[in-house]
Amino acid sequence: MVAEAQVWEALEEIPDPEIPVISLVDLGVIRSVDVQNGHVYIEFTPTFLGCPALEVMKRAMEEKVRELGAEPEVSVINDDSWGTDKITATGREKLRAAGFAPPAPRLVQLQSQVHKCPYCGSTETKLENIFGPTPCRSLRYCESCRQPFEQFKTI
Amino acid sequence: MHEQVLLGLADDELLLGWRDSEWTGIAPMLEEDVAFSSIAQNEIGHARAVYELLVGPDGDADALAFDRKLEEYRCAPLVELHLLEWAHTIARRWLYEVADEIRITALKDDSDPAVSGLAAKIDREEAYHRMHAEMWHDRLRGEPRFQTALEELWPYALGVLPAELRGELVSRVGLAEVEAIERGTHTDELAPLWEEMTMVRRSAPAGAQW
Image 1 (cartoon, helix red, strand yellow):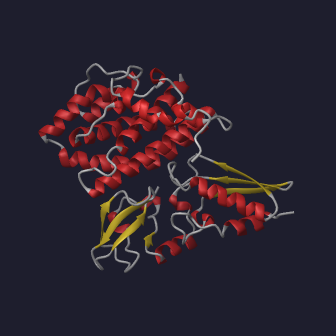
Image 2 (cartoon, helix red, strand yellow):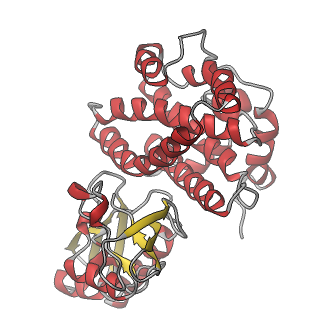
Image 3 (cartoon, chains in turn cyan, yellow):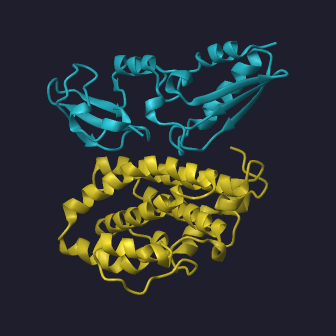
């Protein structure tokens, strides 16, 4: 019999397919885990609706649950419950350490001084492109250390 | 009625996503190549989520998206237009985003929580499309080519919204209300797009294996 805590532990091992430094649990996209009679029900929210990594994440979760000897039921919930404020403190630190500026908190995102360079910590940064290599990232440039960097968008 | 509104939204996002993706690889600058590709990906993601909502958990969203006859599409004629010219492309993006914001704001108050929840999620992403469109609008405002493009596309833009929501669009865009080119009618530019968009489904009705 699988316990809920074991499932969370297993899910913590799944990296985000596009930003592998952070796990799905750190990303905050797993809304709930419920274990009943050998079935594990997982509710999961996409970051961006058009995220191509959705299917990969779903399959990875199913595999992890099967490895625990249980039957997975993963449902994708397209409601408004995920935002970048759901990324955990550990997750934010892992992003920063890998050179991705973590998203600014939703309440302050429109202030230009909140976007810090993940390399030198300066707030003297400017927006280069709202869009980047994946839907969840923007491109910024640090005026202090002259380093371009990727900024996780606040949503 | 409600279902038709959602189908119209999904069809708009699918077709505009398709049209915006036509800039992938050939946009006038690299930043816009990235921006248009990303915006297109988001719009098609929104379309998918709305089709999924319409068909329910056991339905086939691809069938709804791609197995309809051309005349059954509920998109606004604005999104059908094949615009490979920058002034018109940016004019459409801006007009569409202004109209779409009015529509999504209304859907966020919908009595069905599945609809209002999805509208709120879509809105979080659209905020970035609006920033992009506003940035271009600020830059090109007053340029004669851009102004002409806005005026040419204006009757189409009005057709994105139902009559009761047009007043806000008129005041935000600042052009006089004219006769709208209504949803439900189609331009000649839809046929080649429909041919291309539905080709895989028509050639492999049981589902293509990749």
